[in-house]
Image 1 (cartoon, rainbow, N blue to C red):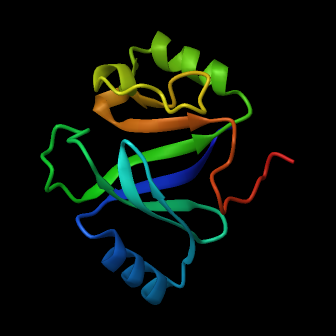
Image 2: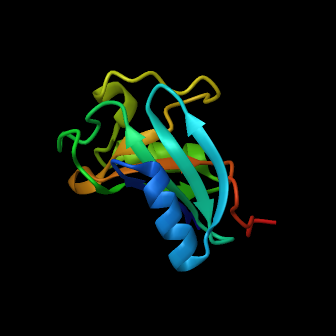
Image 3: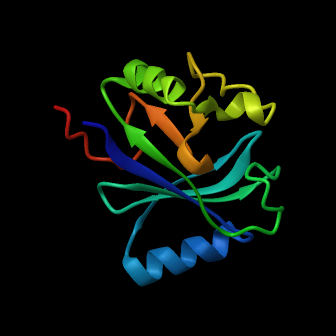
Length: 135
């Protein structure tokens, strides 16, 4: 079974969001990242990876001022099967739709738009801070 292991929250101020979530909930800061898609912080509660990101393009079609849930990510040891099922059931690679290239370290698209347009990642590698329950 795939496991939910990654939530991404779009924010206008990643540093203030970091302060809020670490002080209120005690989440642990993992790292800062800045790439062609977004910049911000990764946190963890020990099971879930939570990204607080300011996006560099309007990836959801909701405007650059959108804040809130951006996408979620699942961790699975059957990523290729999940991708096949996404496509069989009408999902599309999100990176192609947005004219984004897959990230350089990916062998296939990492992001998809599925049922009702929800955006999600499928990964065979856990995100930083995740507990690997497959072992």
